[in-house]
Image 1 (tube, one colour):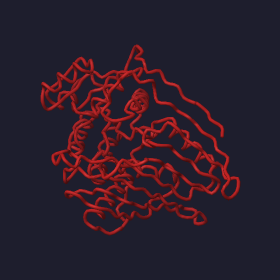
Image 2: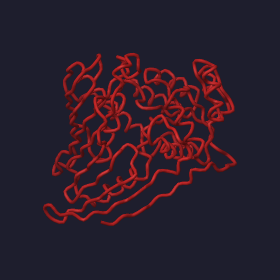
Image 3: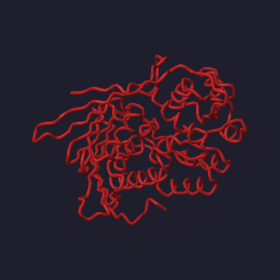
Image 4: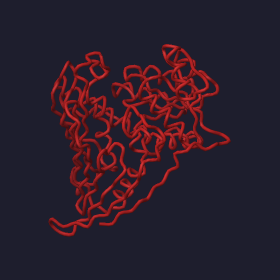
Length: 371
């Protein structure tokens, strides 16, 4: 086994003559983690925060050393000093505030899911295109160096033709907290919470494939999808290439291993747990049945100056912050690592899963993700 340590990252704030100035919508838990990550990312600064309660915004600003706080989201969006708006509200408010931000011409990053439906995501993408404004769904996993390396290896053909990929993601939902956002009928449930982490792998494994079919089964608890098993099929224009399969399980009933395996005809790639914050990529080259040659690529997380995070691995937001800042400086409207097409396809997959598990909708794939 060969091990290669390939990435280093300074976690100390460094001065920049022209930092990208972020405005944060929400003073909640994930917004707090994001503000911490901004504070240790070179060339970025959290300039303003807005909350529905001004007192909460002021407390958040004091905690994170943010200069300006507002008692509304609108004031952040309209601030001439804010370069990028980060929307970290509960998911049921993403669409509304992303629309306002894009209409104001602000580069916008929306926490996952971008919206609660394919149609709403299509509308936001259309608005971003119309206004020539940067828009990204916060799929931070795609911005990690380990994920970049994985895509490079797949593109090189080193693993051969990708046959299938399998992944899992689960965390225990707060059963004793019936008012937690995870139980919201419209925006709660396991698929809208973490399903996209697995669903987005299809476009990594099959970059030239087209979505063919989505089939899902699962359990429902308190009116929302609780445990889900899904299979997504990709077809290729080349009829000699067999369909590719993505299979994954997500659950709110257990803390799962959270590992991803991508199997090709010449070998396999594994992102070790937790794959949504990938630090280790293992490549096994096929040497015959039951025999492989392993190469390990390590990409440690940035040095972490904080003791407490609301979500493990959140220091890794630094990677997304860097990519967004770079894209905004370059005048791009999309992030190279997670494009509008990525968001649209994942939104379609998530729609299908939620409909099938909660309501038994058919698997008709005529609804296009690329409009």
